[in-house]
Length: 199
Image (cartoon, rainbow, N blue to C red):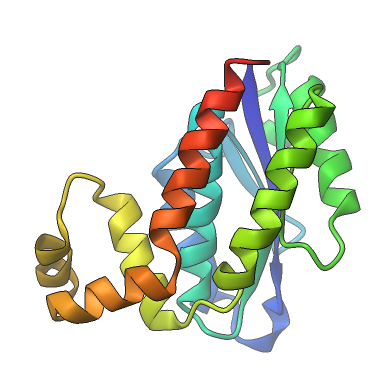
């Protein structure tokens, strides 16, 4: 089983593309190589193929990186399933993970993160949890987004080390993680990973 993330940038035209596209490419490069594992298409949309257990944290990682701009946000749909055909470009590959990701993306309205798999009960539970997490995540400031990006990219560093890394005080890092609901996101991620065993 794999995960396919399909996403697009909200307010992509509100600033010059280079402001957010370099950040998006930098994060996507951490998860794979283009164009086989990720690709940007239609100017402000992307797809990423990733190990299913890493998918949710990757989605929050991408969101945090984009929220650094202050003007942009991102919509992401996670599809969990199989890959029955792997092409040289991800946008030409196929399988149930791609279908679920596409269907989930089409169903996203005001919601900015969703998930779809063959397990309907799991989908419902996780989507409710995502909606609650987004009440906080959709309001991340660039300061909170910067700290959360650093925390996700350096999981083995403590707050003091993260503070040194990004040139902030430990107290401001602690406050940003609290305001951004980072601990709660990690709890949702742990719950999500446990649910994968049911698929």
